Length: 435
Ligand code: ATP
Ligand code: MG
Image (cartoon, rainbow, N blue to C red; front, side):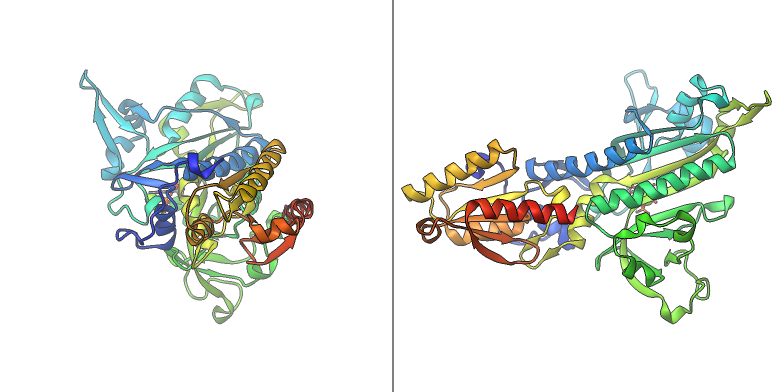
């Protein structure tokens, strides 16, 4: 993509309304535009990141055997009256009337609708297990929308629902999602800590919140320092071993809870990006979702739900990965992999070499953002740092004379003068190592 033809409405000044770094960088890098409190348009650069995150989540859900569906955002209130949540949900639920005065709502979550679909079509244990997921917009009229996409009113969520014959099978589904989340977040280039969360009256340890460490996080985490040493590789471990390591948010943590001394726990701020939850027969009971077991008896389906905050992740990743100049995108979610900078637009030689490189890279299916603008050098370099693409290829007259380009790694800040070929090799090798 040529920057001269693209649309990145960058801001030089820090926007006043943005209190946290990810929100500032997202506005300054022209990724989103606020339309109302907690409601945003996604501009081209931001949308590319959102889609990349979405696709990684989708691939891992599919690998786990979950089936993708898409349910409407506007739903009939009657379904929610069955579960009692039309009244119970409170002011976070946006209620709407259609032209016939029928009550609708903008879905804040989807247990009711998916349970209604399930009870209509699934009757036998032979059809189980089943997991259905969607990646779709939700609306919650949060009392304090803030921090940009981190706590929006309209936000994108991956929500998955599992249906099983009994408790044991439901735990298998839960564990599968637990593992899937570890794999997903690893691919997204962030470190998460699965914390034990409250699961209400059902009890047990069958609710975990997945939190990304970030100074600006909304919650405080207390966790076994083993998580720091495991790095991002703990998805290879056995699930029962993993669940033994202690981690909890301040809401749940009570001094003395952990199996290791309180003073040995690591304490850090974190942002919740995912939540997995087993809730048994809560919805199947009120909505009468029954299946026939092998003995021919009708039993209630055991359910779980599993959410990931897709749009929140865009901000959360920035909060976890940046420096004072801008965003540092993990390769897997970067809007483009390479930023090509022509240091002297207008100089015939620089233009020709840059254009040739751009053509060659795009023909190789590389994702390149090419700054071909007639702009001051300082502006170009600062914009590229702000946008935070993993690699910068910088083309200038000095390098051209020696047949080299400057290759800069955004994350390490290291620069090298290399032939174009070795620059490309270097990026590919580095990429393979990171994967
Ligand atoms: P929170 O405690 O942050 O309000 P929640 O417990 O209400 O979250 P869930 O109902 O479990 O969240 O939703 C699943 C995921 O959706 C959360 O883990 C979070 O990443 C994301 N999410 C929830 N509310 C919002 C919001 N207002 N804006 C953006 N993402 C959200
Ligand atoms: Mg909430």
